[in-house]
Length: 463
Image (cartoon, rainbow, N blue to C red; front, side):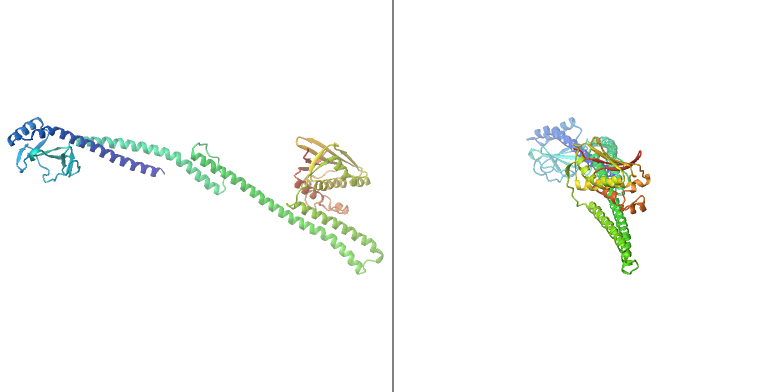
């Protein structure tokens, strides 16, 4: 960029030098022609009606007063009437053009009807004019502006060299101010295309600063978009992995009881089992089929909650009354094991949420608490006021979960004690359904070990 700027400056300065030189030369020569015309005009005015001798005397007298010029007076018939000693004709066969026509450099130049002819050298000139009576005046001399031209050229060259150097310095500074930020923008853009980190541009208030700022904003936007895409890709991979695991585990969970049921029925058909034992084994088959039916229903619930097309139907519910309606069934199970369920929820506390999804989640939470609380234990359900909502807590005492197992409890078919869970008819999908339902409703939750038990908490929106 600096090279092209310097080249343009050089051309501009060169043509400016030529222009100014030509203008000064033109002014000097024009001034000199005007001075010559004014000097010889009185002589020409007195030649009218004079004899040849009178003309010679007037010319001689004029030359004594004006020795700077060499001139010659020629009669109409070509006879030389008067000629100075050092007069030297440059050219005498010029056809004079009409008045006021101007031709330069070896041609005729008219100045107030005085015609100037320059020779091959620009330092000499010839002046001629037709006076009355057919007398022609020839004047030769040296152009006095030659020295002026030389001095002018020397000074102009020096001045233009200074101007050129100053222009180069200014161009260098200007190019640095322009090219350096643009070069940085180009380097940053290359880094952006390679997904390399780029620092924020320096603050500038001009167009380049605005461009750099816009490019950086675009980079940050693209960076955020790329990060979001990476997160989305990882999420999709995780979902696909979870789906593969879920269906693999579901197939395994379904295959085992189906195989057991088939074995029992085949044993009956092949008379391996005595007819007297049929009722016992048929009841066992029915029990396993009921468990399978429950498992299939839970799998369908998880699939439904995983569907993005599912729409929430939110309603305003009284949390105390809602909890009472759910506990009517689970109190019976708790009474069998001599467990106590205490509820501490204000009677006028209301929330707006999807009652079906919330019932599904809350039922599994309470069932999990009843199943894991020791006989004679306590389950405490209560609320805590929060800045933005209300926290619903379900606490069951006398139990503790290993810390490394806490994150895995919400995975499909995960059981802390698999043998015990199967004997109690647990599918291992209860907390998975809880997580799916609460995540779908956007309700934050956590399961933690606390003093003397385990606490499940949910942060509900509060009116």
